[in-house]
Length: 242
Image (tube, rainbow, N blue to C red; front, side, top):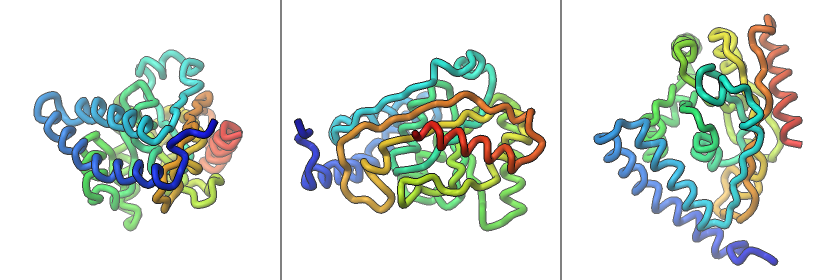
């Protein structure tokens, strides 16, 4: 039986609902930050809003593979770089909720100035990279590697942008330099369903299954060649996508 939310009218309502409620949830995050700190506030209100959004739009979220990861990664003792394909605007907030350990995003600097979304990302501790200036970008990635060595988990979309076709795009090298510099494993992640539900440029939210699949970590210490590491991780994400 077709979901009653699977029509153009309701899909538009879901999109409008998101636009109207994002400012409200950002205000809640900022108010909560005054009481419990910005990161804890973001981690509470961000996933909470996303669950309401999924319900309104008829989206079923599913996470697989986390329990098969090494215990040290699952309990946060071993920091890691989580790398995922990027299909939809839904990916950043949902992925943070799908990763049970605390993690922050590596994001392009331009996002920092996007109203509400950029402010929330900054409140959550995102590390912003200036891709227009190579020296500053390298310095930012080196600082990020220092934080990862100190125990922080980071999330990166190595494609650098959302796909327009649903297919995996070529990877950018920055995240791999960071992971090799920090000497921590890369956890490959595949997102499936996001492109159908809300693709880049889309204005209609469709109901459906939104799935996050974790793969086994890649030991960066075993690689001396960055391009070989990129090819390995890209192959694993492609395989997880099915």
